[in-house]
Image (cartoon, rainbow, N blue to C red; front, side):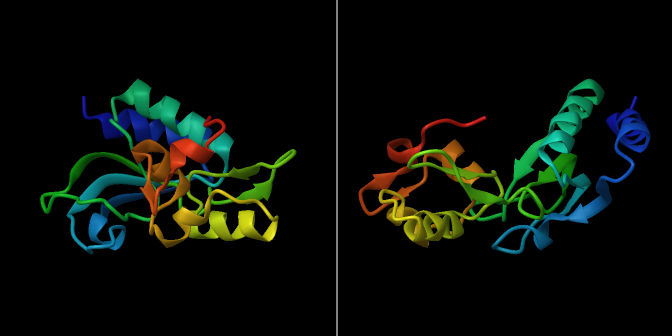
Amino acid sequence: MDWTIQFDEAVSRYLPDLKVVCDEPMSRHTTFRIGGPAKRMAYPSSREQLVLLLNFAEKSGADPLVIGNGSNLLAPDEGLDRLVIDTSAHLNRVEQGTGNTVIADAGATLARTADFACKLGLAGLEFAHGIPGTVGGGVCMNAGAYSGEMKQVLRSAA
């Protein structure tokens, strides 16, 4: 059975407010403006939606791909037979944590997160200001520049 049938039924039943688009061109979501359609693209608006979405994806065999703002991402012209989850639209909060920490969602840009840390008087994330990606991608790829990298400043990821 095609994974989209089971996936669409689960989303319709349990996440009726979740925005899901069929055959969304990946060229709209990559900095190089390339890529054919993703079979499904979802835009979760909360962490809870993301957790449920990933659960539905696993159960339906959707093979999810989580993306931020599409920097450092190449998508094939023939498209993707999978679920693409865009965190940059809504999962992009940056807030002050306890002590000398910043809490940032996966879809928050590294530049915005670095600016926020600077305004709090926190040092260490300056290297990330010029990196065009998001926190989620930066953590996955250990983004770095100017002798700084994510592993030097990351306390935890959940």
